[in-house]
Amino acid sequence: MKLKQRIVLLAILLVIFIFTKVFLIDNLDTSAANREDQRAFHRMMAGLRVELVPKLDHTLQSPWEIAAQWVVPREVYPEETPELGAIMHAMATKKIIKADVGYKGTQLKALLILEGGQKVVFKPKRYNRDYVVEGEPYAGYDRHNAEVAAFHLDRILGFRRAPLVVGRFVNLRTEIKPVATEQLLSTFLTVGNNTCFYGKCYYCRETEPACADGDTMEGSVTLWLPDVWPLQKHRHPWGRTYREGKLARWEYDESYCDAVKKTSPYDSGPRLLDIIDTAVFDYLIGNADRHHYESFQDDEGASMLILLDNAKRILLPPPAGI
Image 1 (cartoon, rainbow, N blue to C red):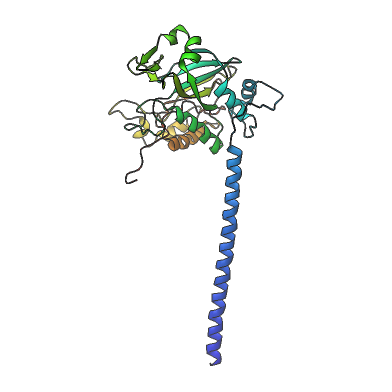
Image 2 (cartoon, helix red, strand yellow):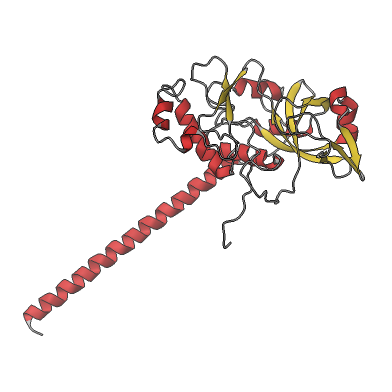
């Protein structure tokens, strides 16, 4: 083989060697990066795991006092919450000492007071967990399990703006009726062998009660925020009109966003960014019904947007073809 041919062959072999080495190094780097990503994911999941246990290691022995002191203007609970499992266990098991109709709203709920004086909101099961609500995004009843799932999504995203939520089974006959107010008790009825109630709300009807399985009803329990943090209600700037054929301004006015950015409280502070965070959150849970939102009172725009009423609707129809 001539010298020139040898040089060309060596050059080709050198190029192949270099590319092979680079490719192997890239693969090793990618594998190492993937392993680190997996480790980070497992660390995150371990940090999010909650065991509902009664043991409470804290100088304050009341779970309600601990949860109350967590609340600050920009978060409902802190990033590190070793007491979370004990508080959720208390929400799911503490004795119910009073039951009343829910606060104002469009959907059925009950206001319960647990042993120790803690208020919680109980939303009853209206659908099986895997039932898909068809129609408009705001159609149908609230889903109790959507509240539970939305709370844990709030934890995963690191927002920490949703009140604590846990699932709970209650016996309507032995736990609720004996401590119910007359107003709530008057809405109880029996359908077949099942105990039911329809409560008081805008859409509550005697013809559409929520029914237990016999006497046992599944639902979600949401921890009431401390009374020292009164709430202020705001109309969502990107809310729907809920009128057929009538568009909201944001649906046709391309300058609407600029107008919002010049309006208090969106012209300064974190509120507009909170609206964007909430849009991402609502997209992930399939909620297109956030026509209003709450913040803490007299905050001059510094308070977080609190993620309340997240029960519409975590389970969406599957995409076409799936």
